[in-house]
Length: 462
Image 1 (tube, helix red, strand yellow):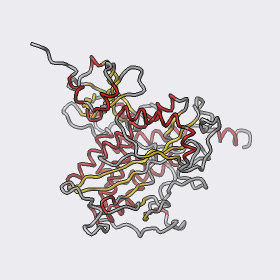
Image 2 (tube, helix red, strand yellow):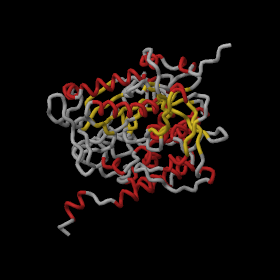
Image 3 (cartoon, helix red, strand yellow):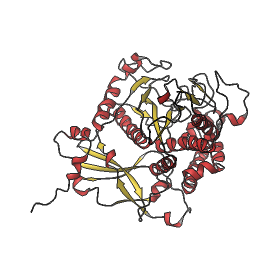
Image 4 (tube, one colour):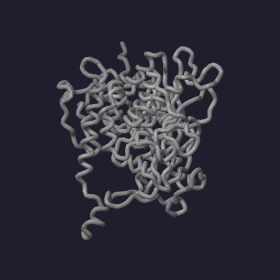
C-alpha cells in the first residue's frame, strides 16, 4: 500500500507559483506574519520540515517590540505575557519568493492561542474583526490602495541625508516631474524587476506613475477584499525593496525620507457593497449618493484625528504634513468632490463605483491597521448616522477651527487616541492599549536622541 505524498498540498497552490517553479524542486518555506509595524516576522524551514497540518509557534512578544527592536513591558492580561501563538497557514496567500537563490515559498499565517481563538493584537486579526462588524450589518467593504515610495541611493550611514538615485543617464533624479514617462524610464531596470517579481508571485499592478519627488514612484493596486489587498501591500513592500537592492538602490517607505522632497502616501479608496445584492450601498437606485455614503463621510471626519497613530504611525509621519511649497499632503479632515486639497476626496465615478478616498494615510503605515482603522471610522458613521460638513469646493479656509486639522505631532496624535472610546472598542481595547504602549515608548526613545541640527546650530552658538 503506497504512502500518501506529504507534499500533496502543493498541488492546491496558485498557478503562478507552479509557473515560477517550472519543474524545479521547492527548497524552502517561509512562515510569515505581519507585526505591528507591517514588517514580516516568522520562521523559514526546508520543505521536508513543513506541513500545513503541523503546528508552528511564535512568541507573542514579537508584538511588544518597537520599531527599534526594543521590548515594551506589558501587563494587559497575564495570559499574554510569555505565551506562544499558533501559526495557522492561509494557503490562499502562498506565493513565490522571487528573489531567493533557490525556489522558495512564502505563506502568510494567522495567529491563534492554545484554544484556537484569534490573537487580538495580530494586525490581520484586527482587520478581520472590523470586517466582522460590517458583515453583521450585511455589508462588505471594498478597498484599493495606492503605494507611493522613493528609490534612493544606498544610505549606509544614518547620519548622512538620503539622496535621490542615479538613473540610466548617470544623472541624479530631479523632482516635480509628475507623470513623466521619461522619469519612469530613468529607473526602468528597477521597475522591470518589480514587474518580474510581481508576476512570479501572482500579483497584479494596475498602473505605475512618476510622482512629484526625485525618484518617487507610485503603484496603483486593483480594488477588492480588504484582507487580500492588505496582504498585497505587505507583499509588495517586500518585493519593491528586494527589486531595488538587486539594482543597486534602496527603496524606502518612510513618509518623508528627504527634507526638500514631498512625502509618500498610501491613499485608500473605500466603498461598501451589500453582501446579498452586490450593489454599492453608497448609491441609491437612481444613481444619487445615499444617506449611508453621507454618514460614511461624516464618521470618517469625526474619527479621523483619533486614528492618526494607525495611519501616521511614526515620528517621521508628521513631517509629511508640514506646510511647504513642495508638500501636497492634506492637513485637514475636510472632504470634497474631486478635490485633492481635502483629506477626504470623492473621485469622479459612476454609481456602482462611488467611493471615498482617504488621502491622509502615509505609506509607512501597517496596511492591515491603516485599512482597519479607516474602515472603522466609516462604519461608526453609518451605524450612528453621523452627518458630514459641507463639501469643500476649493482650497480650505486657513482660519478653520483647530479640530478641523490633523495633529501636528505624533505626541498629540497619541493623546487624542487615548480618548477615542468608540474606535478603541471597535478595534479591541486590549490591542489598543498594547499599540499605544509600543508607540509611546518609541516616542520616548526618539526624544532621547540628539539630532544633527542640534549639533550644528547649538553646539557652539548657545
